[in-house]
Amino acid sequence: MKTTSLKMRGIIATAAVGAALVATLGGCGAALGTAQSTPAGASAETASTRAAGVLLLSVNPEIEVEYDERGLVTEVEGVNDEGRGIADGYSGFEGRECREVVSELVTEIYESGHFNQTIDGHDRNIVVKLEQGSEYPGDDFLTGIESDVRSTVSGFGLRSDTLSVAPEQLDERGYIGIDAAKDIVLAQLGLSEASFNDHEYELDDGIYELEFTSGGVEYEYEVDARTGKVLEADIDGNDDWDGRDDWDDWRDDRYDRDDDWDDDHDDWDDDHDDDWDDDRDDWDD
Image (cartoon, rainbow, N blue to C red; front, side, top):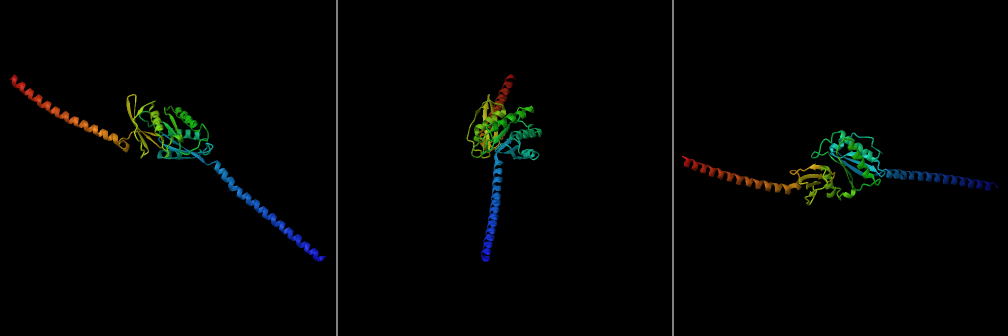
């Protein structure tokens, strides 16, 4: 009986150790499961605040506004020197509605004096462009931003208009299409229609060189295909105007030939008139 009792104690002790070991392993498994679920939760949270798109605001300063799938701003960054001058001093935008932030940036641009520069006497327009691959947090996302910016500049007493460019209006390089470029330049000049002298736009330098006629007046303007900014034509500085330069040179040469002909004719007239006057003087004498 003594031996049996010792054996039973050994079995009970072994069972107790086994149970404790199972409990310990179970606890470790639960802890491991909890630890493994944490990154997944963090990843889901990160996914909910990921960047859904980028909006490019262009006046003269160029500023990119990054937003998430809810339309809340995650980042503001200047693209050119003027844009960096505005964006670097702007804060408190994180987590706010994109339309509010963009309107505030337009106010900052106005207060910095960038609307003082006009285009052929017209207040500068604002171009709001959604970059390629950008998502719409809502159906009225882009139109809402456009409307708010238009109201903002109207409050400054400016006659600037606001134009939006959707991703569908961009080519594979992210450039604004020719039709949108035409609409932008006509809006900048306050024109409703025009006859364009269309040609092949290679866009090697990312610039549309547009020649058009409206109301009997000829116009030459450039539109930045990336930002939509309107610039006065730089005929001497852009290669795409070479054909026009050649035509101008030919016309100048033609006028030079005409001048030479006029000079020869004037010399002939002078000689002829002088000879006639001398003959008349001799007759009078």
